Length: 341
Image (tube, rainbow, N blue to C red; front, side, top):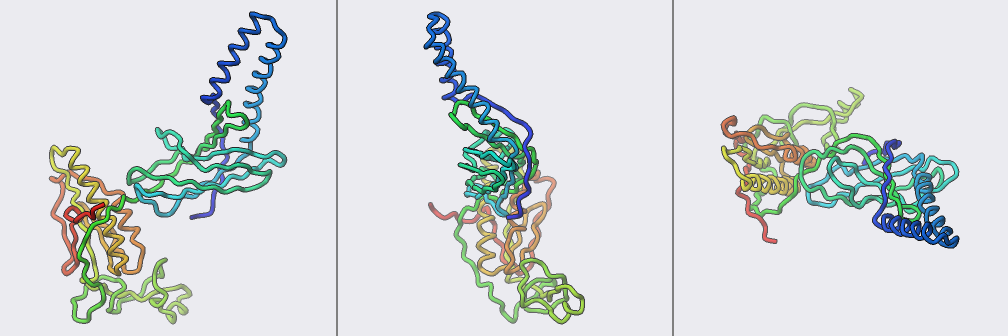
């Protein structure tokens, strides 16, 4: 997770809670009783009730002043799986304490859920809290910002503070386990080699070091001469590549059942990507209208998951037949056998 960037809120919204509505209803009844009876004791009771409402409005406003909020989302989140979202709040006030704050994502059209709860934030203090969010679908989630709310001190009034900070959160597909007879991906000497750089057996050229490259691939002498890290490129063997095929050709007159089958194929492909990578293979996802980057051996397969997260159906008449690498191990995600629950 990256370093938090703090944001100051501007918009405020206040509303009565369910308990607050009942409290106001009782207050109105006491007011009618006071007017009808003229009893000083009833007037005193009415004054106490109204002062509690006023005190709730004032104190909830005080605890929400000069708060700065930052959000840290996980680098990798899958649909249907818990993802830990962290929030930091800085109380920039020099003297007063904030109590009972709850922070959640502000997503257009989505009601607020259970967010990160902060019991107490002292003056000048930075407090951290986290909550678990489960994304219902794959793809890009548009975040408008954050919502900070409190019911302090009596639970009569709930006050919101809106923090505008538009951003996007990419959700990877759900992963549905499937059975597959995996071959061995260990290097064998007499196989045909691809003219493609990778981490295989045959030496290639040199390229800049990238995150995830093995330290043993670094060409130290050349790196010292250039003043920057470079690694040896090697050619991948065809037999060490797994290509996972997802048919995204949208037939004419497709119904809801087709879309469910398509999403199931993507979920199974996401699982196969992780399994192939864990077994030491290079992985590539192939669709009818394109393919992902080839994920080399030993590199996290986020590029393939990202491709699946954004994959959409395309009318079949606009698509050509898929092309696979010769000698690669091809898996059709639509025909993969699901594991029984």
